[in-house]
Length: 461
Image 1 (cartoon, one colour):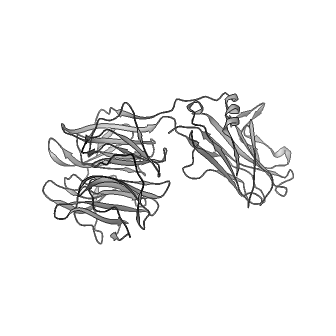
Image 2 (image 1 turned 90 degrees about the vertical axis):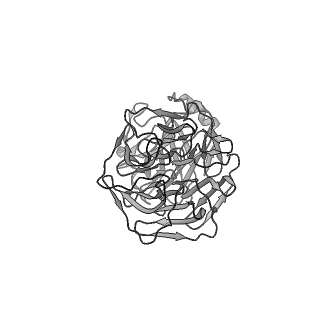
């Protein structure tokens, strides 16, 4: 890897006269004309195939447990009458089974007893599943979908006959299977879980233990639970969490502890909990639900409870200036294939962090360079993409302006290029375009090939 100091690069970027954007992560209250009634202890999940948030049931101050189904399309709520439906309940959870395209509901409380049933929603109707094996009835558990292993994971909960539960279960659409990891978070209820899709880990925080609110953080890799250091964040229960892949962090809001009901926003990056002090933000609450909207690129929060009663407000949480990286068009054939420029999953150009690009399908060793500039449409008098066939490079195109160029060290057919972005909001919004230029004598008459293009936008989180 050939590292470059951004101290020099930033001066060059300033000379490119790129536009900047203000950066902030913010809570925004939505004001839909129609919305589910005020409630708490409801379940929500995001249907990736239909791009809809699904909400079911919960406890309403006016009528107790409910069994209505609602969907949020990113702008409006709409109630969905279904020919069949689970019985009215609260204290349950929903999560979306990506492989089978179903929203899964398990268990809950009907005001008198616990359910232990499994239901699935396909966007039209609810169908009671008949899995082989099932967790015992319960409420106040946590459930989320493991996108790495393609199954639902459930942990803990409450059964008045036993108290807090500490069991781990998985559901693959045909059977619930109890797992016996060598270590686990221990009995608890009122905790929250979210799956970190970038690191492939289920994250669990807090809950109610025998001695009160808990403040520990655990991660599950499908084999065992591992406790990770999580200093700084106060213990709590009845909170909610969602994973934001744009931020690359688990977002936590609210809950309660001995100090009362909370209005705090925290983020977990896999190493550290960091509090966000934001205004405006949702009022303090517990027993709400939060889910990430993959199409809108933001987390949705609905409802919850206060000592005065249930809430019916809708909030979204997102970064206003996200860092992005994408590829565009294609490179041209070399002796080892078409050079490929890319970034690791989740790697984005955030200020204050390292941004790394890698280039594959290169000759085993030899010269290569990375061009970086402000445009993918114009460079001096050239209109991009610019056809390089006249040089003896058939099917090769110049895809990025080359105001900056960096040498690459090629080892075993690949190269990395790293950039330490300063923690400077003045560069947020910079739009940068990259392309690798590769010396490859056997590739064509000119002996040079090029990669696809890369498009980056510097962001802040």
